[in-house]
Length: 379
Image (cartoon, rainbow, N blue to C red):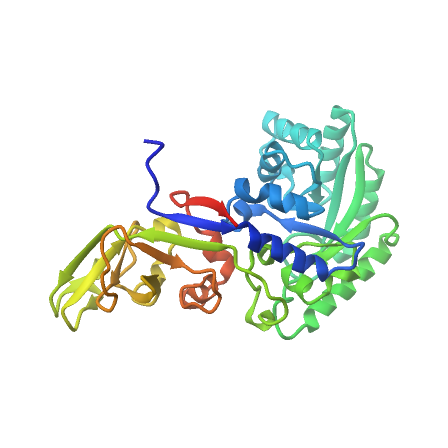
């Protein structure tokens, strides 16, 4: 059974990812490090496919969770790896001990956001007989993760006083860097700079704040490292930034027609019979649905491309399939290739436009793509 091909194939362009990383690098000062986000399976594009290329063109790799960090290391990555989530949130006892031992052994840079983590990490480092490298994250106004600005100096002192821990960086994250009004972003920058000063100044620490939007807008060079994520894969963080950098979307998603048939005028289709054909029509089935990450809210709204024609999705998106209207697509037949997601940002079925239809962001469109989709690396 392992040799049976998937109906769904995601072509991931190595050339596009390479171009995007080179463009992002040019936004930075020559001494600024590029930390590429590879969390969530490279934003749904396939960690195993892209890790070698991204590692080659980046200085540091960033993940969300400790298990992602270990996966990246076990896949052969030699670059520094920064984990945004601490393993200290794991269950107590042997599981926590085992996790910290492995993270320290694999030289994963761990993020600290609170005082309770410090002695736990310090004890693990001393047990391992080596220093554990850590960064402190500061909440400068986003109200999500990080130590509050007023508590940051005490936390930094605690880390520096803890045997076995080595503080090598401090960072924050922007809440509004992808919006036209940059005033709050600049407020966050000011708070972060004040916190750094209150903690004893920069010293030899790596300071970083810029995400994709801030990197594109050249805020990154103010500090020592920038952390682009979505932009690595070719998608603009917001419409506000569309014209700033000519990123190349890396993903093209293709399916196949698994059935073609004619239906009479007045017939309906899909769960709830939400679409009625007003003329004799030819319809086709494509084996993708919300079980694969194709949003149900695209029902009766999205299009796909087949034989050079845009074919509308008719009826509700099911778990495993969609129905498309082929009436205006001459010659369509079973096994024809169907382009479900286009790498052309202007196409109606691009990641960006599907996100607009779904009322979401490009990140969610690519991250939702499921395991039944066979990902392949192409140039």
